Every structure is written in C-alpha cells, then in structure tokens.
Image (cartoon, one colour):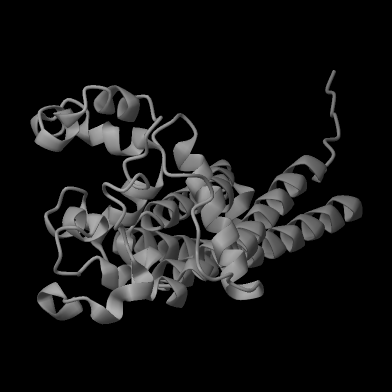
Length: 208
Length: 77
C-alpha cells in the first residue's frame, strides 16, 4: 500500500470513529459547536473522503499493474518483456521510453482534449465485459492507431527526423506526420505486441 | 413542549441513520482502496459512493426539516 493510500485510509477510519462518537452522543449537537462538528463530520469529511478515494482509484487505473490485472491482458503483459528490439511495445517499455508504471495508459490514451475521458469510459466497458460479458478474441483497438500518439514524443526528435529509412522517400515523413501512412500498420513498425506468437519469442528478465 | 420533544427525537433518529449510512459507505471505500482490482472502482463508486451520498442527503434533509422548539414571547410591562 502506497503512502498516500495509507493516509487516505487513515483519514477514512478517523472519520468513521468521529461519526460513531457523534451518533452515540447526539447531545453534543445541542450546542453551536456541536452543530458545527456535526456538519464537519456528517457532510464535509465524508465528501472529502469520497472525492479523494475516487481520485485515487482513477489514478490507480492508469497503472500498468492495473491494466494487466485482468487475465485477458496476460499475453500483452508478457509481450512487454520480449527480447527483440523489433517488438515496439517491448522496446518502449524496457528502455523506459514510456513510463514503465504507466506504459499501457501512455500509448493507449490519445492526447486530444477528451482522450483521457474516452480511455476511462473504455475502461469501464472493459470491466463490464470482463465480469459480465464475453471477451471477443482476438482483441482489437477501437480505432486505427493514430500517428499523433507516436508523434507526441517522436516529432522533432533527431532519430525520427533524420533517420535514413524515414528520409529515403522525401514524401514519407510528410505523409506520416499527416497520418496518411500509419507508423504501425504500413509494413514498418508493425510488430507491436504480437501476443499470439509469444511461444516463439525470447524474453528479457525471464519474462517477469 | 411535547411536539418539540418528538421533533428532536425524530432529528436524532435521522442523524443516527445518516451516521450509519456514512460509516458503511466509508468502510466500503476503505476496503476498496486496499483491494487492487478493477472491480474495486465499481464497488467504490456504485456502492460506497451511493451510501455516502445517501447519508449526506439524510443529514441535510434532517437539517432542513427540523422544527426547533417554539419560542414563547414573554412581555413585561
């Protein structure tokens, strides 16, 4: 349990104790100070605890561990440890090109204004399907992967702008930047997770 | 006097109900924070959050609907 979560749980338990004291000694509320205390204990504190709890859970939902806690994600989690630089997800994860503890969220949330909101709504749908529905295999993205998510980091980077392959055709880079040619489905960086073919792969760190 | 006593009793009862709902909701929230699964968020919001909001509503309603003791004006000439 992380430090902030421990503090929040302590605050919640403290609130419960205060509520218990107030409920068993209602005579306290006959005075002005008691009324203020009741307002704090029965309104402000619970509301604060609820808001902080929801915020904490939303933050936790962006963690790699959270995403991989569902059984259906297990092969995708393993694919992050493949010992092959051609595996896009593994190369980004192992070299910390994306934050390792928020790897999934970093790549699978789009950077538009409501990208985070859409990701959270999709997450709710995933929970529903996981527990009440049937997971359809193989898994697919909701929309084709937009180059914008790659360019969020790679645009302006020397290796991207001056790479030999990227400049072999003068029309290539403009087409990539305009999202007319996909980074991940045009024959260039097409090996992303490759979750169905991990039996033949070699793993770094024993695949842990 | 009797009417205000009953009203005070009613208020106390509502405060107890409110406190119980809030305590339950907060305890469910604490359990969900310690439970690292996607379902925890659903339970936190769907069950814990509803109980907490219900407890707050009962408390606020009790404030609004409480009739305080009637004051009898006394005049001395």
